Length: 345
Image (cartoon, rainbow, N blue to C red; front, side, top):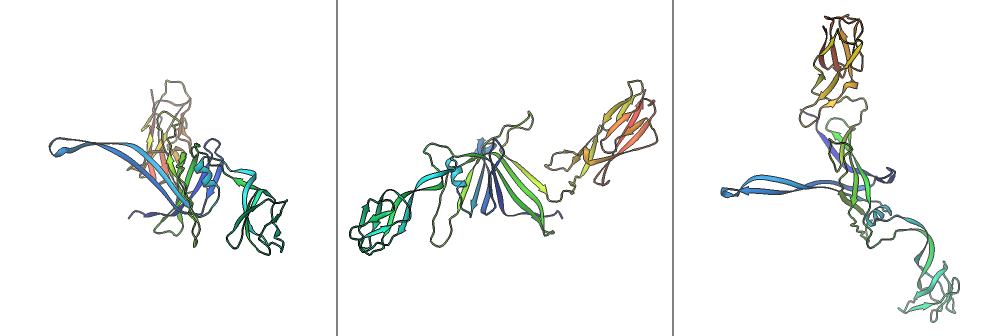
């Protein structure tokens, strides 16, 4: 029975600047994380009963949503396409102030402008302060609440009306466990080089709980770095925890299937053996040459093979009829292939 593996709990999130690669945020207190891949289709139908002849799939979208239990300025800044500035800013200050029998009192900070006073009888009055001192008519011996503007050093985000949300490099990291072992078997990493934040932000305040924040958006296409692989949205990687673990290939294939040297040619000369690891199914063949061992049989000194490189050399003394076999093995000999090496006229 194949080993059953399970993706457990939620993912950690690493957010980077897509230009510099520098990390902007690390989220390790997430409540939920979701990865969604979707496509639309156009059906081609014809004939009796309008049978389905073909479905053309298009408009692939990849979306991510992460909900965090912690509260900071990062998620709001990403959604508003802004940075967090630090400096002296005007903020609203509220407090309770004790007034003397003459209605005078002292507030805690220096106001910018007037001070609004909320008296116990519901009267709201505005007074002009002298420094931090205020005098309230009709407020003798009371302790009203006051509100005023003051200057403080603080972090601030300015949410613009036309600024688009930020594009970042986003990576999700989650744990994969199996049914047998108690530890982590693999790590799943989903890296989106160009993640467009959706710009949707809701902050709910509750009397009996804490607020949560959500970061959601879609992957933008990233251009391929070569002419064969094609453009892509994301790369999904399964990383084994054990650094020494060998990939379980079904069999190996050494190419070329045989090597021929000409004794009449220019010697010495070399040829290389390349080894592919084959897993079958949807897995691509993998070049595992550097993970294989190469051992020649026979005592022909003019033919040598690199023990870990697969480089076969025909020395200057090679003559027609020199023949050896190169045994190729992977993962301590569990998978083996053979390459005949011959010198011809």
